[in-house]
Image (cartoon, rainbow, N blue to C red; front, side, top):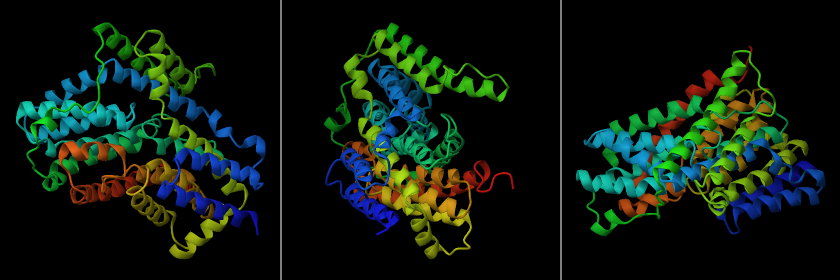
Length: 435
């Protein structure tokens, strides 16, 4: 049996374990990486190279900074101020909730953001006399959309970068590059919910205890720590974005001022200034995503070097047709990824689909970044199912939602996301740059 077929069999086993979650995702990914070494698909010394990738360090550091925003109470105060500032009508409330959720989830995890904003939205709905069932689903959707805005906003984004690196592409997506698609996508999502999606939202009177239940224990600091946390976060974001801006204007900073070093310095300052404890910092890192990234990075390398990618691309092109344009193939990959992410974790979905997207793009001699970006976005479009992503599951009980509510409201948002993604990708990441 060829190494390519052997790798595809291993990938099939990993896929089944990811979808069924018979064992933890991280164990599956790391076990797959070890299996690659045992089967001779990758050198033993490269099994855990993914843990040393700059994107992983950046993701972990920004997770710590995001946790400090939560633990100091800065996120809650920002949310209260922003949501109330949008007005009292239902449409204004939806816009306020979604804008706030999207902005916070671009630097916080979407799960933490939803948990943080859930009691805030419940309280404001109670004060304004608005049904919470009309606001909590837009909140969950916004947190999913907002995660696309930065490379650290959601695990599929860092996994997309990892897959590119693992298969030999060094031209990865930078911190704010995802904003080129994340911001239009979020804007379109808000517009959809205000004009169309709200028509499918249920209007249910919820028990009083549900309205008043706090989803999480919120630690409220003194104003001094909130100010310190806000200052550190702002400096880190300016440091990361400023480096790119200076480079565009011909000013290159010393190599020590990389995005990950700026983020790590910010995370350290958050702990040293007491914005959060050392234990809270460790707990704030999504270790499952880090370990899945590390494991699947090795597996993506094996798919590339063993020839499995070429075999997989050949099978896909047999179905779509060898003369099919990359645009159509990317659309198919988006749809398949979107369907898969409704029933399994977005992390697992991105980890499985990114190597396939890269393989197909290479077979068509197209830039793989377009296909990988489509897969990363589609992995975050788990809007049509309450189990596709933690934010949906968090609001299901307090909002009194049924499975059909997510299917009716979220399916349209998936369609909008597909159309926006395909339009933006064609303009920003062309399949054949320079032609």
